[in-house]
Image 1 (tube, rainbow, N blue to C red):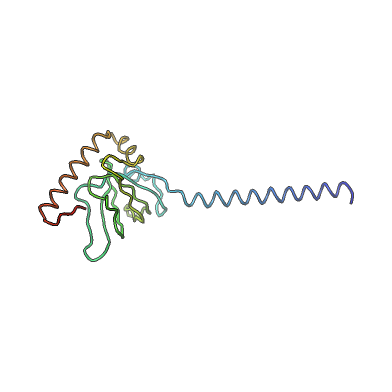
Image 2 (tube, rainbow, N blue to C red):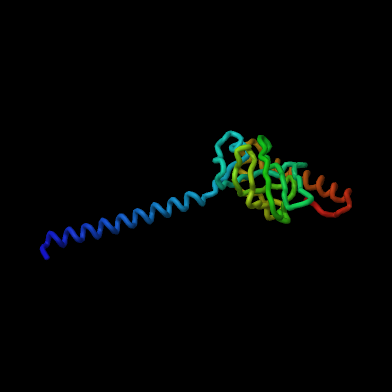
Length: 173
């Protein structure tokens, strides 16, 4: 086999391998792009920064008096706020034990055309002092310090507990 033919054959093999590698990298990046859940605060969602009908994460505080449970199903509607703007969230399923009004949450779901979020997952804080970092940053950008929302969370928690005691069922949201 002549030297030129060998070089040409090696060139085609190298080009083929580079092409396959480029295709693999491209497919991997495409798959990762569709699985990334970007975080948005209610202010950003109200400003139109969040994509519609695509999986996102949104967070803030559960607004006091906003939790509405359907007595016939597991449907729950509540409002997430950063004390500047509000976001209505609709969820079907069992909420975490730590979920309650006045506490920080992160919801994963799709923002709908009408401006509400259909949640697939609701994540609540781990303990009394925990605040998801994205929620804390969004609240700080809205002008609230960590002390402000911790005090508000304690205040709302006491109100909810007092309401539960008054109703006699001994449980909280």
